[in-house]
Image (cartoon, rainbow, N blue to C red; front, top):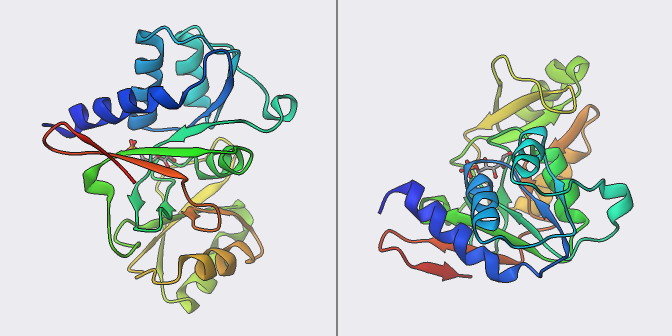
Length: 218
Ligand code: 5RP
């Protein structure tokens, strides 16, 4: 089974967590897109959806869903999103698509975070995927130097601006054995808007699409 088919399978499996006529949060990326398509194909009625990026907002709108502002929506019962890596504690590296800040906000404002991915995203130790960090542009060099002190190799994401008008530093070569501590250390650097580690608030449920077409729930 291809990665595309595995994404479709987990997207389909995530539908059972959606309550009709609720307001849900929706993540960003190809797996989140597969979820939006599955939602629309199944004609699941929603009161509205909170998007974690402009791209997701466009796709939800095209599928006929009403977009909600998180400030008016209150606590969401469900957030569905993909990931770049997941470990055994359901801690994640996210932000490959650059939407990490809004993703983290919507995840934080949701009671249940159901993460969907193909099995290739499962790792024992986070860090093979370069860790994205969203940074205010004027702090780029300072934050990069501080990240080197923490043991990482930061690289400015080429010609990329986030939906919030900031830049991304992708941190290579970090074996993240203590994700909660590293998330806190990076978060407290002046100029950092958000770190792509989702460790303090991990996923609550992980659906992993397997090569044989099955979906594993962790
Ligand atoms: C975007 C993300 C995505 O969830 C992550 O990059 C996974 O994307 P895909 O589903 O395309 O593999 O964090 O910022």
